[in-house]
Image (cartoon, rainbow, N blue to C red):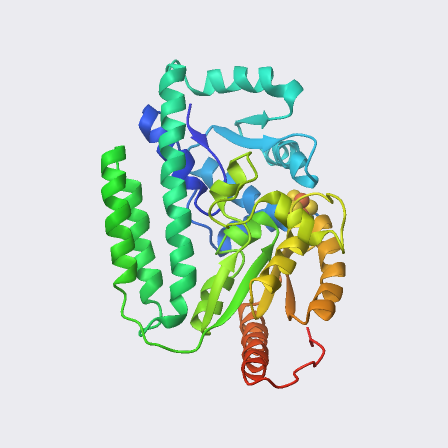
Length: 370
Ligand code: SF4
């Protein structure tokens, strides 16, 4: 059995580490690329969510690399995501690929079936080892989330553009190679030292929060490097979602730093109920960013994403009421890097202008232009 799964931010560290620990065969799809996108859009339905197409591209590339078993979460929700696995299975079968799709469902009444599937996937490894491997992988992912957060905060001060990104890539390798908790503790110390040793220059930074659909927020290739671009434009960046916060069911979100209840409470004047995906969180996190003194919010969403379309229709009112600029970016296969760069540049300029005016005690009650 050669198992594979699609890319999503640092997910490869979690699952890759589990498979390595257990000594199971797996295929990591080639890194996301223009070809991944072309394959996904060639085979995926035009009206489908953008992430369905990109992950379909990952599956095709994994099958080309010899994978024969694909794993994907599925279920009733929280939006169209629950139907990805079945849709992709049918598309790939129609295209003539020979494989097995293992759909993992986590609704309470589907747990026994999911356990049976996991039993097959673990291929005789003891449950104790599986649980140990998952815990270790989550520790790695948690460290990666915190390293990425450090990079988001400091990139704006890089003396040499790209230095933080290079250091972060080295950190990823160090975390990947750690093979015990003791090694991981050492890597944690060394990786933070490495990031913090990147030469900096003191300069004024604007604070920008990123909200939006989970996959796009986490996947740098398909969000066209929005975090890095903002950092390079001089923005201290924070994200509303991190992988391990999402994986933990507690709602505590220790990396992002705000409990789900706090986000829902903050959203309440504008949106009182769950609308699927991260729609509610996008609204609530925007309000929280305002309270925390951020200078602007960038909202990223895939084209045709239902929950984020709802959030997008509400955010202009949040922006007007609170006086915080919000830029919604809708991404699909047609989105160009150059256009995005120009919009981000204009947005950071606007946020900086408003911050300076505010710091100088001037009335800057212009209406946000985005
Ligand atoms: S959150 Fe949006 S893009 Fe993601 S699966 Fe749901 S509808 Fe599609």
